[in-house]
Amino acid sequence: MKWTRLLAVTALITAIVLAACRPVSGRDKLIYGLTLSPSSIDPHAGASSELGIPLTSVYDPLVWLAPDGQFVPGLAQRWEVSADGKTYTFHLRKDVRFHDDTPLNADAVCFNLQRIVNPATKSAKAIGLLGPFEGCQTVDEYTAQVLLKTPYAPFLSAVSQVYVAIASPTAVKRWGDEYQFHQVGTGPFMFQEYVPNDHLSLKRNANYRWAPAFFAHQGPAYLEQVEFRFFVDPATRAPALESGAVQVMGEIPPVDAARLEQDLKFAVLKVPVPGQPLQMYLNVVKPPLDDVRVRQALIYATDRQAIVDTVFMGYSPIAYGPLCRSTWGYDSSVERLYPFDLDKAQGLLEQAGWRDTDGNGVRDKDGQPLALETVLMSWGFVPEVGQMLQQQYLRVGVQLKTQLLAYPAALQVASEGKHHLIPFTFSGSDPGILRSAFHSANADGGFNWSKIRDPQLDAWLDQGRQSLDTEERTTIYGQIQRSIMEQALIIPIRDYVNLNGVSARVQGLRFDAQGWFPWLYDVRLD
Image (cartoon, rainbow, N blue to C red; front, side):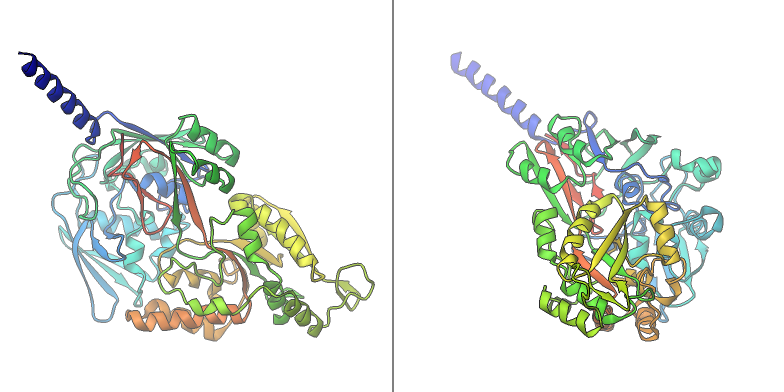
């Protein structure tokens, strides 16, 4: 009798333990910390990474960019590309419905793409991702055909991103300009509520049955709810995680990340962000930076390792060129071009005619001091980087004057070309993003903040995005990266790494190939 009772108790304990270890559906809530409250979270209109962090779980893309770098079926179960590279034919799944029960079909796909390019949408990012989009037509109920004016190699990368979200046409038509507060997709979580500067909440889509195979399970997500809260002040982020107010916190300051890594209750996920690194654009048309020797001297005088070690505590690798190492097409040959060399920097400035004639520590020429104006924004520890650059450049006789501006004001200064140096970073998995920053077409009003107008660079940038041959594209983008650095159009600072503080209770969290956007579908709380 005692043995029978003992076996029964043992079986009960075993069952309880096993139940506790299994993913639990329907009762878990994850609280996720965001670092800024976007001005717009309509994926077709907005451009911030913060909008994509929650909305990646609300929408499914036409195609997924899998962890191995391959494109795999999403809402489109298969696709074909025409021989001339200008027509993409997507064959859609027939079993998908939007959260409001609107069926997914070819009309819905075309509706969304046309909405993105409609001037009334005022798209800040998605329209650029679509490149030379010409139109979309319905072949039959479940076949959509996208027409491009010219071949466009990054197109599949574009439609894999949350900014080209496939939204319910019913919801978009119903809510109009208020759609950002009533979003409807097909993803594993449904949009519940958005209160700007306070929170954004999602709830589980119990009908989700079409996750790609690279996820760990099928069927509905494990979490019942996800709530995103905003922590604009970096100093508040780690304390929120340590107090249990959140279970995941993005963009943890490096000093806090170092502390959290020593605590078994937390982990720090270090996610490389592909695209362009943190870099200072050099305005090539504003003297004295119209002299390539002065621009090159600044790169040689930049002690990037000291910046990375001091500001980022070694969590970010130094950058060498206009692409991060984690970006497809990165050319490692740029790593040999500009070692830190104060003697080289001073020699170039001497050659350019800049000397310290009055002994005040700042070089001068024709009665003018070598003083440069830079605009800084508050994100990404840019002010701290600017302070270190001030100190480093003064060692070679260059005075750097800094001005901290809000993002809209900084954009205006950059557009008008009033700066000498200005920082920025772009994220993206395809090297085609370089076109936005270095093509002549974007020198007036675009993101070509170096103001470079180089016909050869333009030709390579055009060719790189039109070629569908992988080896050819690799060669072209290698030439582009080397040319950008040989002309000293930027000062690379650091490859971007997204530091995410995570409670040890959180299991199954991964990030997509863009580096910013979490896959919450497999996440559970133990």
